[in-house]
Amino acid sequence: MKKIVLWVIAFLVISFCVVKLLPTTKTVSETVDVDCPIDALNRNISNPNNWNKWWPGKKLSNGNYSFHDKEIVIKTFLLNGFAGETQSGGKQIKIDLQALTISSYTSQINLTTQYQFSSNIVTKLVQYISLLKDKSEFTKFLHQVQTDFSSLEKIYGFTIERQKVPNSSYISIKTSFDHYPTTEEIYLQIHELEKYIELQNSKAINAPILNIHTDNNKEYEAMVAIATDRDLPSNNKYYLKNMMLGNIMVAEVKGDRKRIDECIQAMKYYISDYKKSSPAIYFERLITNRLDEKDSTKWVTTINYPIFN
Image 1 (cartoon, helix red, strand yellow):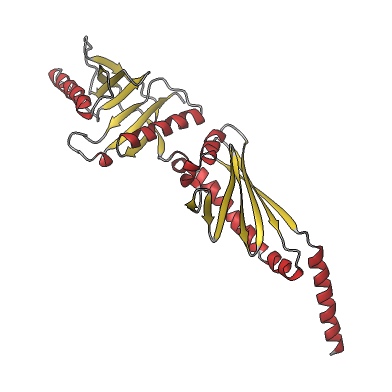
Image 2 (cartoon, rainbow, N blue to C red):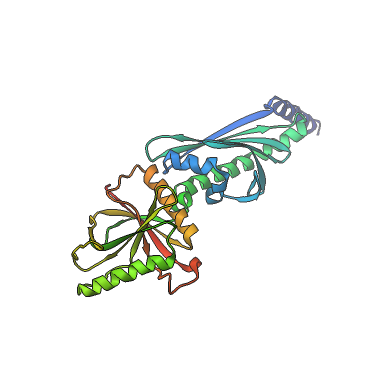
C-alpha cells in the first residue's frame, strides 16, 4: 500500500513539475496553397464587404465573426490578411492570417495562432489538454478557407466558364444618348435590327447582344447586335461585325441592372487577375426579353468576354 501511495505522490510531483515547465505561450503555424491569384485573394481578404464570399462561418456584427463555437474578433484588417483574437477554455488566442504569392495563379495562406495559458498549474493543465481540439478546429478553418478560395464562384461571386464563341456573323446598330438608355430604347434598336434581318431574308440565330459605353457618364453609346445565319451587307445605319470563333469567358447573372454591373466588374477582375488579353470588347447577351418580363429580378443575362488565350 505504501508503495502505491509513493508512486502516486511521485507521479503527481513529476506531473506538477512537467506542467510547471510548460511554456505559458505557444505559437502554431500552418500553411496551405491556394489555386487563386494573389490579387484576387488580397482583394477579398482586405475588404470586409467581401467576407461573406469566403468566411467559413457566420458574421455576427461588424468585426465579429464565428467559426464552430468560437467567436472571433477582428482587430485589424490588413491588405493581405487580418489579425484577430478569440478565447477557448479560458485561453486567450491571437490569430494572424496572411496571404503570400507563390506564382502567377497560385497563392499561399499562412495561419498563425498564439495561445496564452494560465499561470495556475491546474488551470494550465486543463488548457493544455484542450489545445488539441483548438488546433484541430483551426486546421479545419484553414482548409475550409483553402477550399473557398479555390472556387471561382466564391472568389468572384459568379460562375465563370471558358467557352467557344458560338456565332461569327453579326449585324449591329449604334445609337448615342445623353442619358443611360432605357430598356425600351434598347429594344427599339433590337426591333430595327430584326426588321432589317427579315428584309435580307436572313434569320437571327441567338439572343441579341449589348454593350453600353461612356467616358463621362453624360454621353452614352449603345451598340446592339444580333447573330445571323450569314453575313449581311452593311450600310450607313447597319454594320456587319465578324467575331473570331475563338475562346470566350462567360458568366451568367440573374437580376437587374445593379446585379448585371456587379457581374461585369467581377469579369473585369477575373480578366485582370488571370492576365487575359482580349481581341474585342465585352458584351451582354440578353437571354430574357425585358419587354416580356417586367420583373427585373428574373432577367437572365450572360456577360461575355472574348480572350486570346
